[in-house]
Length: 181
Image (cartoon, rainbow, N blue to C red; front, top):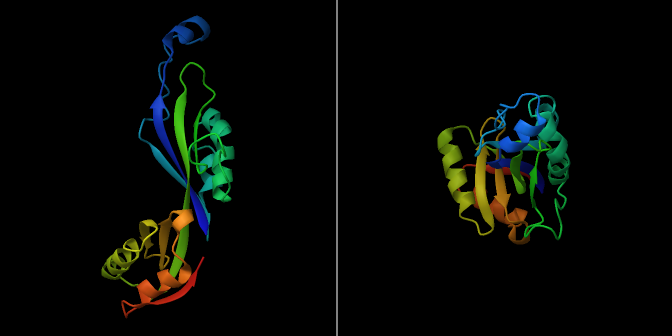
């Protein structure tokens, strides 16, 4: 099993009364960095490591200080917040800015990487995606033709076993599964 982390901005607040009372710039307004609906995906698989790249100056420092520990936990496959949220793969957190906080939903995404020989076009990708999406326990499929693999997002408690994934791809007749991580 592999793991990604999806961070979604679900709300922004602006406390103008606090800004007027405490800030040097009383017209600071709401956070200019994030917008409600912004999504960020962090991953650490193969040659991808967006945890370090995204955390190295491309996120607001105040926010990164608050959410990076949850992102790291998710990328390691851990429980982000056991017995606090109704799903231990998820956390609601906000940045440190007390006059204009941004609220984030942080989610661990569980997936399997299915490496596929013979997948050479968008037509191939579409056929494989359709086959994998119809397996019980699969939530979503992202085909990476550039890497020659499929990312199969699953519900951990009902994830299909590797043999089922392999069988569904190979019964299309044109492809061979060379590995599953």
